[in-house]
Length: 309
Image (cartoon, rainbow, N blue to C red; front, side, top):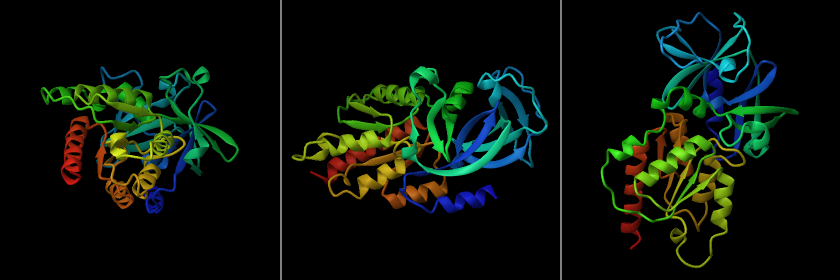
């Protein structure tokens, strides 16, 4: 049922909308992008794993797949006993299947990314907050959790590895302006550090697609636009404007359509790849493949130079 529901929303392109599955932990309302959700199921017995992160319950095996279970209440600091009525939200992103224990699952709400704002640092735990946004859903405030950050903290080896770039060896300095839209503070820092290590020294980081788009529109009208931005890298999930909407705006614009654009997201699947291709993305890569990203950047920039001499 979950898969059938997702098939429907994947047909739409660049609408700047998200479907949020709401769930509760300790009476508080949280949300996750439906595109990350594979299945909802009643919690099952879990086999503990030694030497794992404190928030990792262990593993369970529905059908023939072994899946890691994360105790989300424990991760969020909620002291509550486990119950047979708890729910497992089984997710798929970054090419991983992980189940998150929650207390209840509410309905799905369809909203615009413009209805999601970054949480105020004074109430969200600062820049490293696990909340990626606060959404207004049918009159309720919903905290959208940064599941990529949660997994990166619990299992750092599954996230972006700067060592992939280090293994490439010495690289020539590249001062072409690279613009990156990424809302996760942690992942933005990882991407920036990795690209600096790859000797891309002229980086401009934006917390969402809207701010990048507004900066694009504000570029001087005269001259080659790629003097201001030579390549764009964008996440998909971002408050205010998502990466698909940004891609559509860029590629539908006579002024900006020649700028190479890479979608770099944890949500790249075959269906999402078709969607991104229809919107005009030049390349689409799955996080955390940072070494592959650098290779593709090199190729796109060289190709642009060769075809626009």
